[in-house]
View 1 (cartoon, rainbow, N blue to C red):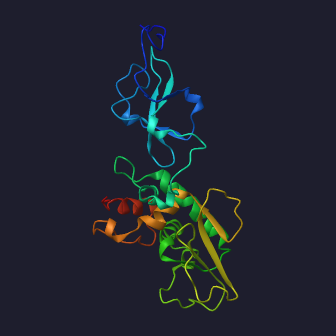
View 2: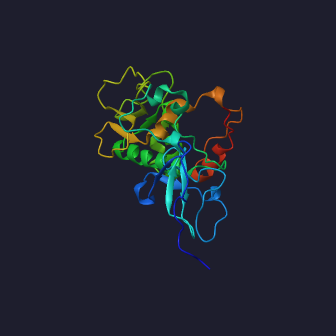
View 3: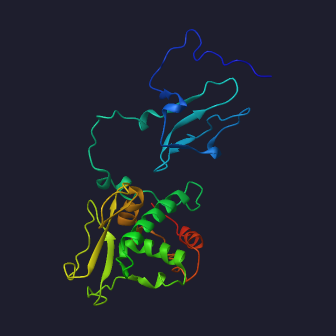
Length: 265
């Protein structure tokens, strides 16, 4: 048997301190529900021991969602997760060590974060389209894009055009070519002695979501860019490096191999 929702606060209830910001569910965007964090409910959703609403972009805890029998539908945001729009920040995100790494491509259960890899794939598609069919050389920071495209294209002729950039600074071929590398705050595009020579297309992978950015800029989600720019520090990994993708192996399999690396904070 179900009854109407009770009043929000009974008579004589007084606020003892800031407990969160209550909003209608439709007034909140950019969040996702984590069902595993929900508590025991009747036929709907109630909060559990941990916040069941997280940021859809970075996975940070944001608040609680309630939608169940005899309960008001509401979203309660954590007080520490809310700030006014005109509130200044002491440092830029890339200057904060906690945010500088971007979003790690493993979810809270230790499984591959397919949202992260999906955003990586969007950047890889843009990169391939803007290379104009030229032989595409990848600097070390852009190697994950090469891994993805190599697994996607398999043994096709397009896969043969994806090559690592020679570390000695020499021009790999005499004809036209494209070179891609990360470019952004604190991580400038690598210097190339032949950058201004004829037939060289420089593709700059930047932290931006605007698909209308003109070439040679290649937009990629900021969390993916930050992780590629700052997260691949060898001292931050256990010494358990996976093998590179073999020709014809699907990238989903390769991402699971990569997920075996244990992050050490």
